[in-house]
Length: 164
Image 1 (cartoon, rainbow, N blue to C red):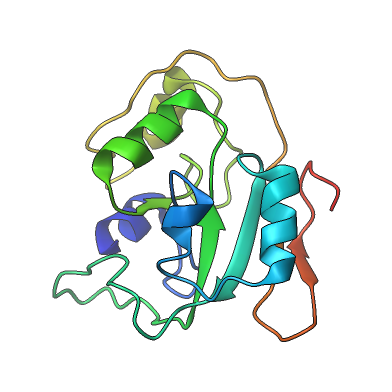
Image 2: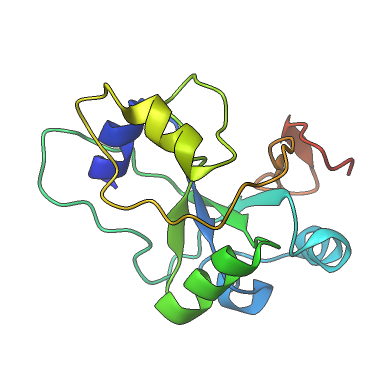
C-alpha cells in the first residue's frame, strides 16, 4: 500500500477502494445493509463504489510494511466490483481484496491505454512494477462513490457516470 501511494504521489489520507470479485466476498469485510444490497443488486458489477463500515471481525485488508510512509487507519471500506473482465479475473484468482485506484499520477487525467500510463510515469522517480495491457479502454467517467457509513443516511461523495 505504501508503495502504491508513493508511485501515485498520493497523500496517505486519501483512501483507495478494495476490489472484490462479488458482493458475497465483500460482506466478509463490511457491515452490509439493505441500502447496500439494493444498490448492489441494481448497479454491481459496475462503476459504483460503496463505502461501508468495516466489520470488527474482518480479516486484514491490506498490509503495510514498516515504512516512514504512514497510511491512515480507517474504520470503513470502499467496495468496488468491476465489470471489466480482466479486473474481475484478477480479483477472483487472487482470492483476497485488491487495492484499486486509477492508473494515473495523482492529479493527472485518467489514462485509457498502457501507452498513456507509460507517458505519465516516464519522468517519475517511482515507477509501476507492472502494467497489464488489456488494450485501449473507452473514456469513461470515474465511479460514483456512495457513503453508507451513517445509519439511515446515504451521501454521494463523488458523482461519477452512474446516477444513483
